[in-house]
Image 1 (cartoon, one colour):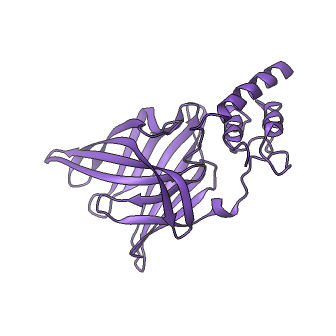
Image 2 (cartoon, rainbow, N blue to C red):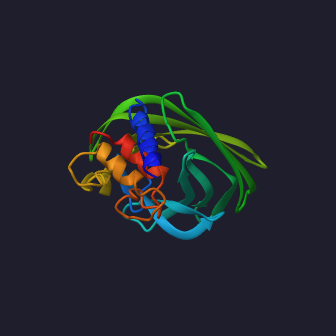
Length: 268
């Protein structure tokens, strides 16, 4: 066991030195981001939630995105069932409220599709495609080509975030009557997640608050005020166990994902 622990630590130390080793969408259960449109008319809340559901015996989580029109009772919610592993964030299902006219759309991905790759960097491209049904229009095919198109600093009401990845999503929607296309953008901050979003109608949402801003990074597992080799050793020595102190992403098991998160946050 000691030999295996040393090997894991060595591998993760090497990984920590990679320039692109950042987590652009922290998926810890309970993480919440609140963004508001610059005109003050709408608010969007992103929340990572636990679920009792499993897929092929593997734990999954929910990303719930709720958009409110402020001052009204209009609220729409979309839920994304996903799991996190060495291949990134994998998407199993989308359930989206489309409004009174079109109802609720449900898209299943089997096998799961890539939601976000494990290592985002400038020039990265990935595609998602699915089929669903909607009231009034019937069968709908949706495809989206996502590309990291820039690295930018983003100023929001919640603060300034450096080296954010700007991701362009080009979406094509096909129904019996024809095809429509749209383009939107989102900005993800390293080790933080979504801080800005621009819809295909040029409505811009910016981060106003998040529980990540007020919460200490949980990667200093030995509480010595630094994320370093000692934290890697602590977690590696509990590999495969259920120790909550070492299970930094709270997925129920101490595994390679916990070691990766600590390695990514060396020096914090």
